Image (cartoon, rainbow, N blue to C red):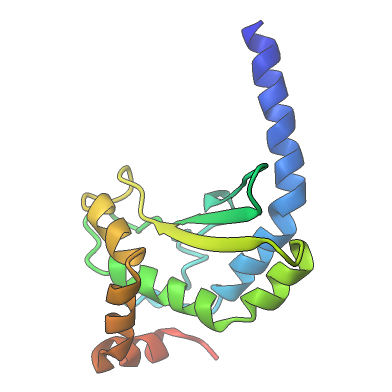
Length: 157
């Protein structure tokens, strides 16, 4: 019986992956030009953000889709984790996400991005995740000249 449940779950995951993978690939394309603030490599090459770390949850009874995006720092004590998260969130907010989501989702659906630094990847994963999902802190970070300067330096045009 347990094997059948696992097979059903695997089948559902495959269907969900086929349904949402084009949109996840779009999201990966958004961040392909961001450099790590400390290393001269892109976040994709360092696997800070990857296709396997983009999770999509849609609700049957409510027209809402939540995109949960994992940000995996290169080391467990990375001091730039929250800054990298801010960069990724900035790119998602600046790109034409609405246009792409309108293409994939019905017009009356809502969507939300949730950024997460998992506890297994960083010592301070939970507090950093709270910071990344706090709109006021993100807005305050974008007002900081030093953060904006670093953001401009880390983005390949």
